[in-house]
Image 1: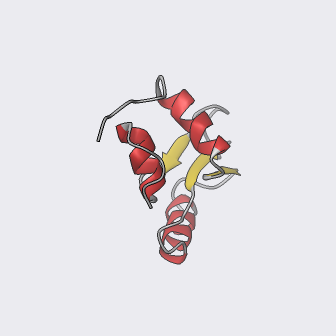
Image 2: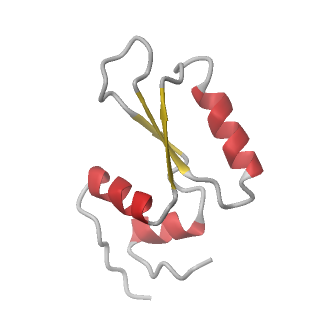
Length: 89
């Protein structure tokens, strides 16, 4: 298969994932008490279709200090990252 990466950096990758409907934005989750639990619940319950999760407004950190979890939880996001056709399921 021919590889053609269609994004330019992480912000662009996040934008493309959001357009695919595979991004969940969560504001205000605590880094130590909530982020891991939220990620685990969504990933285990997602059956291979869990969203990528972008945490922002983390208590104790400035707005804009974000963390991204579950980047590779779906075949479609792995294909996007590697520049492969998104039809892989």
